[in-house]
Image 1 (cartoon, helix red, strand yellow):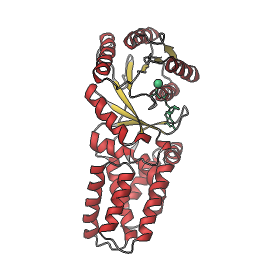
Image 2 (image 1 turned 180 degrees about the vertical axis):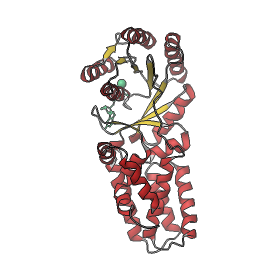
Image 3 (image 1 turned 120 degrees about the vertical axis):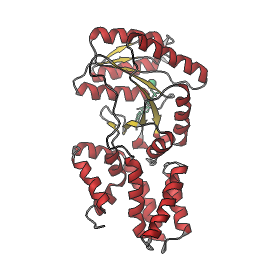
Image 4 (image 1 turned 30 degrees about the vertical axis):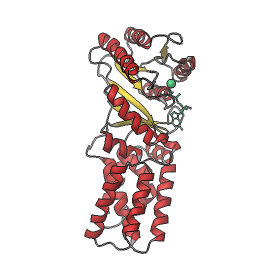
Length: 332
Ligand code: GDP
Ligand code: MG
């Protein structure tokens, strides 16, 4: 399996701590997937229609998306025929390879954040309540602070006082200024002040929190448009990123949210949070394959350093580590 060897080789360029983070953060998904696969492999003596049906169920259960699951299984059938595989145990390598290739995507390079070389980069965070916007802002502020950048946070979720306090706590924790108004204030006014302040301080990055209320699409659209207009008036071409935050544990619901947000605003990337808390890491495939929005960051816990830039080889390794380790030396 030269494919797995190549995959492993790609990892060595990364630091061990990154690999370890992906591996431990994705352990629930990995254990769930390999557990269910092993169980199927042990139960079937031959590769037949029922066998394929069960594989399809496991994939759908792992949130890879309905269309993708059907696609993988149909390719799998062809491959099994082509290679003349009759022992279910030999199918696993093919499945993992197929999934790994899809996770990898076409792109050789990983999606990045559109950071400006000079001047202020403005990043807007959108998403419904509870998905992890504020926490992600805190983690991302920490990430950029450790890279020596000057970071300012805008408390644009003025809907609840608790949201403003929460952002302030993160600001103190990571050492970033927080620009805020009172509860119930106009988010666009807060963000206007924050842009002014960040520019005056010569900050590198401004991270803007928002309240994601989807109850009324027209209101949300108007509110986001107003915020974006205010930013663009101060800095042409800004915001440089609009990141949609989605909670991986909500599965298909996250999918529906992504579709809805896509309709109200231009989303430039997705942050998928709480991947540590779910056994369904297939959601990354569904989002990439079926929504065509790049996943730029993933959340693997609640702590400051539990945010990772999305990296396909690391992710795939996190999902199938034991399998890849066992097969990397196998011959084709
Ligand atoms: P917001 O309403 O979108 O701003 O969401 P919050 O940032 O307040 O987060 C909601 C809850 O999710 C909090 O308890 C966070 O600690 C938790 N959370 C956020 N990201 C992650 C993650 O990657 N992993 C886990 N396990 N919890 C997370
Ligand atoms: Mg919040």
